[in-house]
Image 1: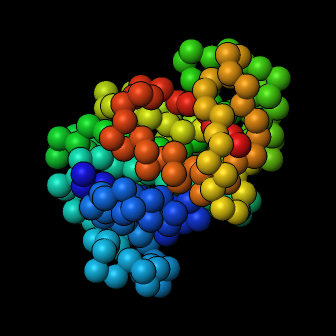
Image 2: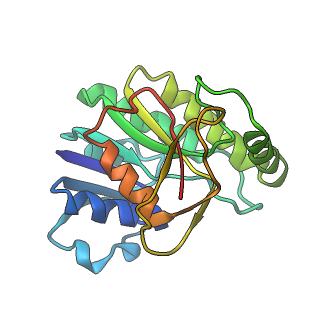
Length: 213
């Protein structure tokens, strides 16, 4: 499949690109800074450079894709302002509809519930921390998620709480709060692997599974 990855040079995005390549997919990476492109991508990854406000570059990246993966996440810098990823996500979704791309895989946190869930102590704690410690980022995540879930596309949103560095453990808890036992920590390598697996798997289409190690 042809897969376009936004946020491709981030900590999780880079690992996701590698996992997609290992699975035999053709990858287009959308990145803001060409200096962050791994040397190992040379001749293996199609690269489009642009900002999240650049509708022309986004359209170029999405054209010809079978699936779009977003590894974008809000800045946690307290000095950051505005909600650029909300508009950026809107541009991505608009481009997908223009080009007839209907599969979207993205990321969020358990502070945003899946429709089949009810709040638990764990989700309330995560939501409280997000609202009080990073209110701008929290609002941006809400806005991005709202656009995705109301897009009419075959979307999957992967939710996780405490990403950490380290090799993939391979032992994931996947499910929904109130029904399944989901922990807090999960390696970025495991997030990337699970993300890449959703590209051609509709098991969680229209759902927002939470994952942890």
